[in-house]
Amino acid sequence: MFIGHVEITGKAALAPMAGVADRAFRRICADHGAACVVGEMVSSKGLTYGDRKSAELLELDADIRPAAIQLFGDDPATMARAAVQAMDYKPDWIDINMGCPAPKIAGNHCGSALMREPELCRQIVQAVKEAVAVPVTAKIRKGYSKNEVNAVEVALACEAGGADAITVHGRTRDQMYAPPVDWDIIRQVKEAVKVPVIGNGDVVDALSAAAMYEQTGCDLVMVGRGALGAPWVFSQIEAYLVHGRLLPTPTMAQRMTVLLRQVELMIAYKGERVAMLEARKHAAWYMNGLRGAAAFRREAGTLSSMEELAGLCAQLVLAEERGEL
Image (tube, rainbow, N blue to C red; front, side, top):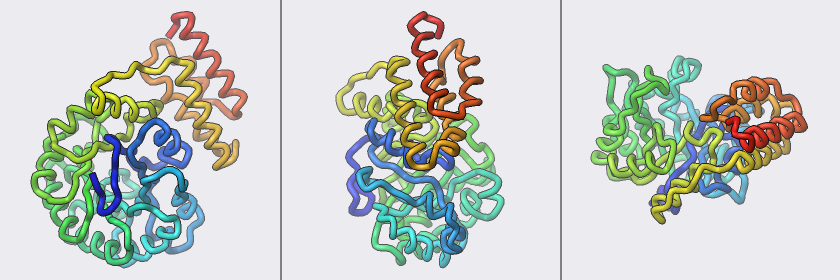
């Protein structure tokens, strides 16, 4: 598929998860077959006001491509200025967040709150599109609430504004990430617009990725929480959809090797103190689905050094060898 002139050759993209999809995680997912990556959402106001943290979130690695920058905000002019500034980091496209359900985002008229104003969505997309030379996409939800399901209307508005592709998460804002997910709304959007549609929501493995493609007709699937602690999900999806092979779950030794590599990258990018605080949640995610891992998860919540993490990883490998997990 193509997003504007940008070709996407793989089968699954990494979603723009705030506080998770940092440079280290994006690299790990790309190494394991992610077709493209989208960075953590950045405040358009923060960026235009010169906020240092906002600028740090924009960093993209030149060898991890295609890659997009995601912006959020509710003012077309500010979003356009932010997009121009974001171009300094050479994104392959700009993504506009119209789906974040977090109270601090939606409560400030941004993210999924924009779903309530399709015309404003159109204006924002158009303003950004006119400001930059790269493609522009929008990430939306099923709607704001169960009584305000309007993904098709918003998608058409974004298309009218010039969007080159639209990502649809199959839940409303008030659902947050609770079940059930509605893939049929993705199908409805796909049938309504002419631009590519990316499906998002509860793709956690190769079989669910195949099911989303089949049920929605989407052009690409986007994996978010399904990649937490399991970045190899992208290679599993690729192997199944392209070659019909179901790859096995990695061994504990293989899992821990990936985790250690990810945290090494985090330390290189952020320094050990900040990286280890953030590594605690990632380490716990790498233990998802393991029986008898509660004690190890508790230990993960206290990590403060790479040495401690290496020790925990070694313990987990031994526990699997003994049949304790």
